Image (tube, rainbow, N blue to C red; front, top):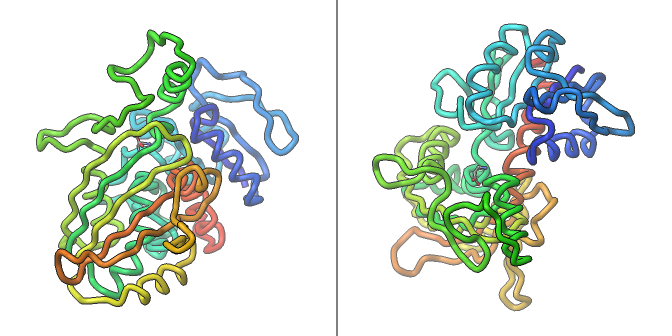
Length: 329
Ligand code: 2RA
């Protein structure tokens, strides 16, 4: 299968290449794609050297699948061009996620919505993916009424510039490219830009994408997204109010039985998820599971995942695996 990776030289693109190899995805021809400034650059993949090509060249090569992680503008302009050439696009940007004609997919939850006609498929936002991975089976069982989520997001979600800034701040190096605020020894209550309602786009992604993936606009969601100086992944403190009561041990068992979710929850051994240990793994880790004693039918939990893997590259490739397994490409 000819597979294009659009944004192959970026942080998520590089993880996509790594995960394609790890999972032995059936690639017969790899097409690394990047902006004009990177065309001709050589990359190594599975022992072979490939030259980066430009977008139009990649379209003309008619890959069966194109995995995009190149920003919303590139997706809006080029995903339709790939689709018109017969390519199935799986896009990691936010460009198509809330488009009513496009599917927004976490394979373990709603891959069954996919058909041969879906030529542009949206990969959800990283902080949404890890949350719905844990909440989807609980919604089925107990019917979620409201979610209050606070995220503690890795600086890798911002991109390589933020990682470089943090490293420079660690080393005491002045970084003229630095963002407005320091990252080291700080917590920044802003991920992405602000909308008119005073929430950031990141926070509103958690609201809108959760309702779309769980196919239930009655679920009330409110979010606060914070950027913190960690690199391993995103962490989330989630408070969930159900329509129905629950048993905490049954919740743990449901999560334990959920593919792609690992429960790490033992206070006697101080066992709970942490981003430094989630880094490089594809599971979503859940702990600190406990009843909210302040109101009925409500539970608290702590959800951690590598935002570059299950939050981006791996989920994208799992969608591609589903398409191949079900002969939808
Ligand atoms: C972030 N989820 O963490 C967004 C985009 N990767 O900034």
